[in-house]
Amino acid sequence: MGGAAALCGHRAAPSLFLYLYRDGIEVKEHVLRMNYLLNVAAGIEQRLKGRILLFPLSYRFAWEEQEQKTPPGFAFSVGLHFSGDKIRLGDQGEASTLMLPVGEEDLDSSLRFEVTVDVLTKEIIRLWQQKSAQ
Image 1 (cartoon, rainbow, N blue to C red):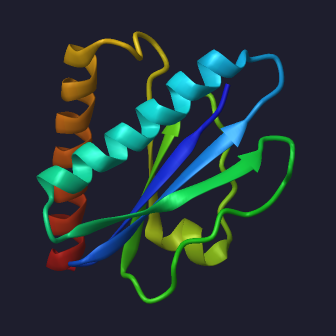
Image 2 (image 1 turned 180 degrees about the horizontal axis):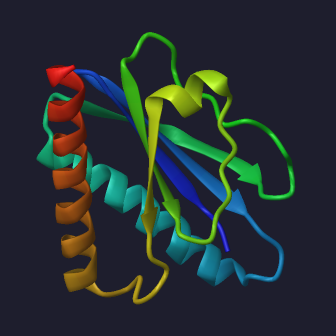
Image 3 (image 1 turned 90 degrees about the horizontal axis):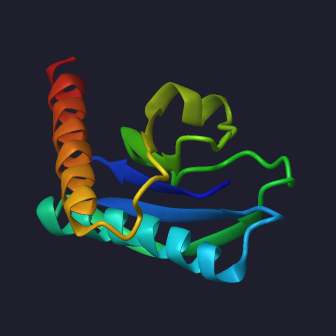
């Protein structure tokens, strides 16, 4: 099952949302999953006002073996993805991208959504602090 969103960070950074389409999932489920990742990315953007900018959706088929690229010129990126997804990063991406898994259970739970956004936001802030201390 698949989808990923990438949040790229360095002060005002782009947020690139990526969704991986997989066979065997009903359209209704794809809509729920895609919207969930998009809303998580937007929730993080809202909490980190001025530091994360949301980019448009990038839609890809899961069986395409393409490298995920991140926008150039940023110190690091954070990728959000469903825990079962395999996202392949290029050499540049692996060195500067932290991949954070998002669980696939209870996607319609508002409490779970708020907790997910809070935890991921704190992890991104921790990463920023760690990178700026280097």
